[in-house]
Length: 356
Image (cartoon, helix red, strand yellow):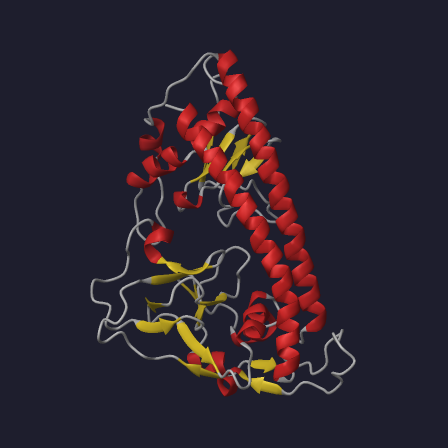
């Protein structure tokens, strides 16, 4: 299931337990892991889902499926669920508590009118998401052609005839410096976490609570433009995620992460950002991680192995031209995401005003 009421992606394998929960068209599916991710979907076909997903079916004499969906795909419901959630790192909702969620139900005729309006907005949101998805695919396709994989020294496509030389291959440790500076003097108090979809983000915003210890002096101190590697794997990020601190001027991060700062004379920061957003570096990481070397959701990658990772680098001028090209597409993506956010805000406003 996709975050922020984004629907679903059909799974290519069954759950590890080998069991699933059946659902029919019109049922409402609510992911019970990390409810704050807003993974809620109104089924458009019959199928099966993970046992970690709750399936709700409308009592048709009282409520329509679209109206029930809008009751659940609502910030008020998510807040209610999180208030009763159990667990810190991987909070789960309480099914009994969910079933006691108080809601007012108008007549079936009024439900249809409200649902029709919200469906119109939902369809526009879905269209906007497809536009963004297409731009993301375009960006990935271009990166695939103009960037090299770890042991390649010539890309499939050069952006200019003035660049013809092979790319030198560096170890990451030769173009970046590991960050080990601790927050000893409490220079920063904004605790960060790496979210695969959102990058380096305020921990409180992501978890809806602070899960860090009160003493932050042992945390790494990061400045804007610094990078961090999260060895935790999930979803599409099976080899973890490398993200850059862009949202804040500074912050602190758990020592469980590997943090580094590029040497700007050798490596363009945007070039590295887009490189780590791609899958180019996955093959080498996959070779470092031996079979079975996954422990409690973390990849068994040492700091030394990570900084020994190979990265092909063209001249700094070519790096900047490459990153400028990708940045142009990225700005369009960000613009379209702003439009999407406004549609979502409009939907939230209607839900707040029309639901009791």
